[in-house]
Length: 447
Ligand SMILES: NC(=O)c1ccc[n+]([C@@H]2O[C@H](COP(=O)([O-])OP(=O)(O)OC[C@H]3O[C@@H](n4cnc5c(N)ncnc54)[C@H](OP(=O)(O)O)[C@@H]3O)[C@@H](O)[C@H]2O)c1
Image (cartoon, rainbow, N blue to C red):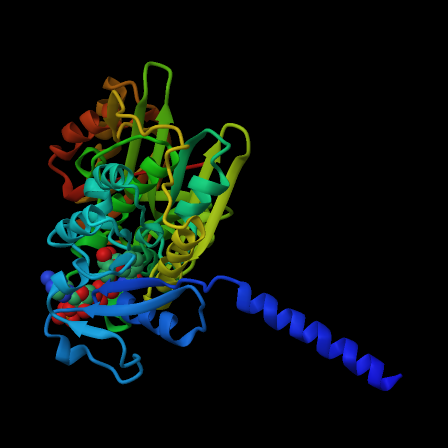
């Protein structure tokens, strides 16, 4: 008996071996990567350290490449300072992790033109010329994927484009910049000034030495433009979306916000309106949000993307929106997406991206105004007179004790009004002679 059993086992093993021999060899996709910086290094680490049957790294390009070489990359990988080595190679996929609009844009066009698929994390470039690059990829029968360009490791783009393709999305809102969120949550938790919180963000590596793109809202705006295209299927340009800096938010605003059961976050929002043709209303700005809301619970450098659809309602994606490793996960996921499709075209089945008739930062909401004034009688009456002339109602006036009369902060909350009407009223109000600094205006976002 034992001999019989043994014979059966060895027979089936032989069958298996024969079957495996007959299976066609699995072709690994060749990857040429440009940019060995924060994200590039993490992508190479994942490609080299995580066993994978799908990809083979062939090239790494960077300027002054000798400085970049590390001993944990296999010796078969070619390090180069010449981008043509990648573009003229037999690599299947060009991974662009250099950043900036040019020369990255030109390299990507050449890679697509040469029939390669492309994966990039470059939000500036995709916000600037994503649709044109997608068209070129379609024309050439290749793919361009940019899941890492918004919210780092959070699968927001793929979730919206694939997971929610069956819905009609009409609103996208979220916390899209980790640096601003770190600064604002620090101010909220410790009562620190904007400058102190920014300095700490810089010391911990959460903010650049030049934080302008983050603080002024430009980084979040590029991501909002990409999400608007992916989710609302509308083509907007960055310049059409107004941004307000978070640097004018003061510790006192968090104290007042708390009295209103709110806190402050940098909110990126785009809304689609189809009543009179397609129009998009969008902005990036600090705003009051209820302490019980999901956005109020986004901590430190994390991100959150919230989308609302006609049929499935609200969906939320959240997690680490930046950093080498989380962003590398999104890049590798895009590589797998291309590998699964065999490089075949994608995106054609989605509703077309339309050019809206109208794009504006116009937004109807209740508003928060914070004044810092040289105190004297009649200030509230003067402000109320201007607001009344524009038909804007005052909801409440709050003044905390303990501030000097030479620079007294107080706030007004306004009933729902349009941002255009309020903007005009504020121009007049800011001309009144008792201000120590311009009035800070933030919408109160209740849903
Ligand atoms: N970091 C994140 O958390 C994150 C998150 C989402 C998306 N992204 C996007 O990912 C991309 C890469 O970001 P990163 O943070 O990895 O940037 P990074 O650390 O500055 O890396 C960029 C790399 O490209 C090299 N490089 C820059 N310009 C070059 C040029 N003209 N020629 C050759 N090499 C050049 C740099 O070399 P040097 O060392 O000489 O400067 C550096 O090694 C950007 O598009 C960014 O927006 C980043």
